[in-house]
Length: 252
Image (cartoon, rainbow, N blue to C red; front, side):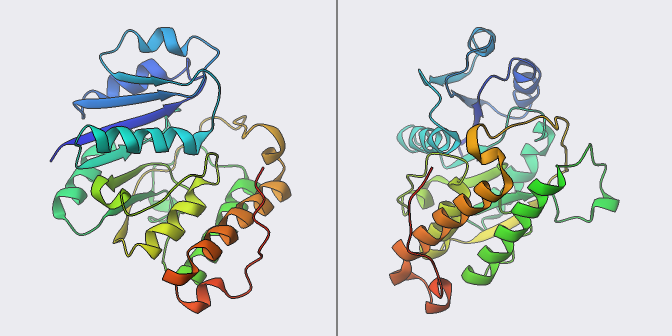
């Protein structure tokens, strides 16, 4: 089983060296997608024996994931694990994803920061309440419409069966990528499971950038992308999934 660990980065000079050193303890094949960093991230990446895709300008989180999926498919990997580079995802959890992949129960193995009650975790910090609230609202709607039982729809720590990604037509470029992804995963009949990862939130100043920093704008944007994708995949979803969806599909 060949596995690629793919790490989107944008201006991560504070964390990138430490994260890569730790990832290399658990992974042989590492791809970093540098989404137009303007700090010292590109120079630091040159110190590590990893593959790098470099965007000349910032193109968005979803675009970086799509680059990783294409790379994994072209290079013949069986699985691709995605994780963030801000020390919120622990490289020590990579073996947990590998074990789940070997068990062959699922096509998508999604990390969840909330699968284990917080009082039973060794948590570090906590997300701003408004972010948790938006994520909870959208996760609940996804579960209701798609018949899922997700506890954490937005965690970027995931393992994907590369052959299953070929059944999807993903093109969302930004932070709303998970909304398109979950709809298409259900429409394609993919098997989904969650595994527990620790909740680590050590930078309360993290920004989405631009208007998405506003809670109501972000929530409306997520819903537009979700409803647009539900409409687009309606022929492969139960009627209840698209009941009452809005047809406006404009995106930021």
